[in-house]
Length: 351
Image (cartoon, rainbow, N blue to C red; front, side, top):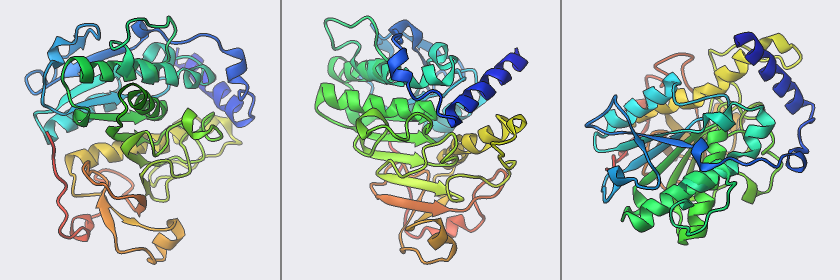
């Protein structure tokens, strides 16, 4: 199985980098249906034992005043991944009042990349619309599926939009953008914050803003770039963009050689996965991993930046622009002097 999966990954990557898949929209007609997107709830009362949410009757969430965090995985993943568990635990450790929902869209996510990327819109929109519509179309993309769910919780279960936080990695980051678009379409309001962890770049980089994650998808679109130009989206695409170590290659990861197919996928995934590794550390230690606003990485290295800083784990900041920082090559990733860089700023922890 591992061998077959490795071959599939290598074939998909080869297709991406030879541009063989850019006609996807012309050849794909299959969408993701709601039964392919599942929701698993964790709370302080049940931090290790989930409750699977029925989106048609989400009574477990009715009238809650807690912040509800949706975590959305990327390509070739599912909720059994260890980072899903680690990020869920990080949020519950940060604030025991949080509700954490792990989204599992593994059925469409395990398809070849060109198909999975095409279906991100379906997954995202459904989460916020599904239950506020009297008639549903039979084929809805993942982004739309989650979007429908959120709007239903807002409209029919009295949960303020300000209570929602959407966190997505890779294709999950692009799904987050579709969720934001759907929420705005259905409610006339924007989500307060999306956190996109190295949102997927291949097959999205040349799309118009309304077909990918962009700064208008929420009041704050908080993006962490770690593998830009390979698996991640390279340019700024949020209201606040973090570029650890320049945003494309991370210390401690093996060098990527796209001409040597035997080096893929492990080195690529190392850089790509650093986004959620950094974010987990930032959630647990919100005053660490301090970034500085700067024009680009060269100016950051030359120390010719603006005197404006923010911690990567500050989930209340309204600052905008591009922020750069250096990390260690292994955990703990925060440099020792991070805590002393950020003066008079203590990230708030909302419930």
